[in-house]
Each structure stands twice: as C-alpha cells, then as structure tokens.
Length: 373
Image (cartoon, rainbow, N blue to C red; front, side):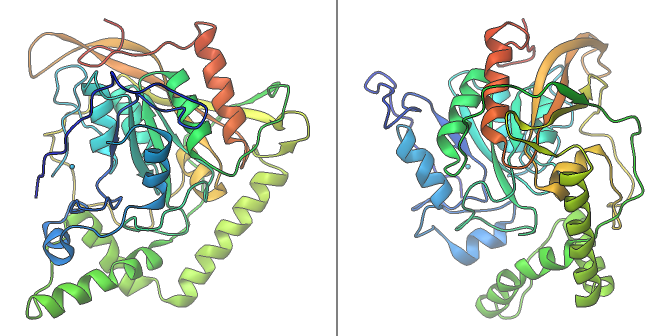
C-alpha cells in the first residue's frame, strides 16, 4: 500500500516556456489517480477494491507536463511542538510542504476548506481556486457542487507561477489592482446550505463495488464522514437537495451583484476581501473533541468562496510564541490571512501575491518548526 516513488535529480532540468515548472518537485493528495500507483483516499478498502490505477488524473498530468515528473492517517504538523492539528482533508500535502525543504509544490483538494485549513495551520501559501478551474476527472469526488483543486507552496512567487501555469482557462489582461478592501465585521451568518446528498451519492459505486467483490461486506468509514452521509440519507431527499442548490444559486447571485464578488472592467475584481485565518492559538492533535459534527453545518466567512465559487488564498504573515504543554518549551505558531477576489480573477490574485512578496510585504517561509527561523 505504500510504494516508494523515485525522486529525479534536479540537475538535469531547466525551466522553459513550455515547462515553466521544471526543477520543481510536487506531491499529490491521495485522491488524485496516478497511473501505476494505488489510490487510497484514506480508506484501505478503496485500495483493495480498485488496486493500482490505470489512468492519471488530467489535472495531475497537466502538472507533470509543466514540470519534470515525478502517498495513511493524519500527518503531523511540523510547526511548533509537532503536536498541533494539521487541519483539513488536504493535511498530507499541506504538512509535506511545511516539513520537507526538497519539496516545492503540493496538490490538494478543497470542497469546504480543505486547502485553506492546512495552509493556515502550517503557515504556507495555499488556495481554493474558482470552482471549475481545473479538471477533476479521475479524482475521488466528495461533492461535485464545490470540489476544487489547489496548490501549496512555501513561496508566494512559486505559488503564483504554478497557479498561472496550471489553471488553463483564465486570462489576465488587467493593469490595475482593486482599490477597495472588504473585511467581515461578524464571525458568523445565518445561512445554511446542505449539499451532502450528492456527497453521499458519489460514494455509492464504491460501496456497491466492495459488496460485490467481498461477499457483501461493507467498507469501514471513519465516524466523521459516516455520520454526515447517514444524516444526508435520512434527512436530505431530492427535494431538500434541490432547495439547497437553489440557496447556493441565490447566494452566488447576491455575491456577484451586491456582495464582495463584483467584477470590474479594469481590475477584474472590484475589491479584495481579507480576513484572519489562523492567529497562532494552539490546537493539539490529541485533544478529544465532541461526537462527530453533523449537519446543518452553518455558514461563516470561510464558507463564502465555497458557495460563491470564488478564488481564495491563505498567506503566512508571521508567527507568535506559545508555551507548549508537550515540550514544556516556547514554540511558535503561524499567523495567516485569507485573501479573496471575484470569481474568475485567479490570475490577478496570483499576480497580487507575487508582487506583495517581491515588495517584501509577504515573505517565503522555511520548512520545519519555524516559519521564519
């Protein structure tokens, strides 16, 4: 289940116009199929049912073509004392970028915050793009309504270059950046949008395949997603799901006409929305929480890009000291901000991050326990 994959030398590759990401090594979240390698998706049963894959996801093949070429449970967050919650389902690639200096990029997915969460917890650059920015064929689905794929990096410049090279359909001929800044004045809003019906439906072939191959035996599912899928099966029939999709459309229309996601002819996005993502408060990975969260899940600032399909990137801005209850020493945890623009403005957002770093406002971060050792 854990094959080793050789890492090619960087000595023999040079970045070109056709391969702008040559010399950069990237990791891939274990829901993207890679030919010849078994996808696990956090479930042993998935690997034993499907075995090694016969196809590489087009999104990953695109990165392979742009670069040189080059896999169970929660990874360890390398920051601070090493026992902080790594946050979100794209934990693996997020922790990889924070841990391994030799790794330059990592690919993850974001359905409801799984890119931005690890980026904030690990203090790296990580984005949720405009929904539909890249193909998700041959990728294990969660909720096709909001599934996306993003990139982690330790440098804003490297992240921006990879973003502009990977996503194929955005064009940026805007000459100015937005002059307005939006910020949230409340931490929670009275919106709910249950979209778990399709999430449960997406796994039906997996369950049926396991039953057929293993004499009716059903696969083990972690308590969190199992609780949500069972809730959806009992509480979200087709009419409820249809109403949830309608609610999403209402929010998206409002966001793009009267909200923070209005377009502008000169700047693409009329404004830049910014809010704190992580503020350096310890969250230990071995703290036992309450029973698995079940829907309705509510709505907060981080839900806006999911429902609006808008691009958002989390960037590191600093680190703060804390007294570790594990090591009994002083450690340092990331402080990050989330920046968002209108739907389809991914490239100008990338240019903005690149320029912030070139001006010294943002800085690349290091691998290991400290962002800025």
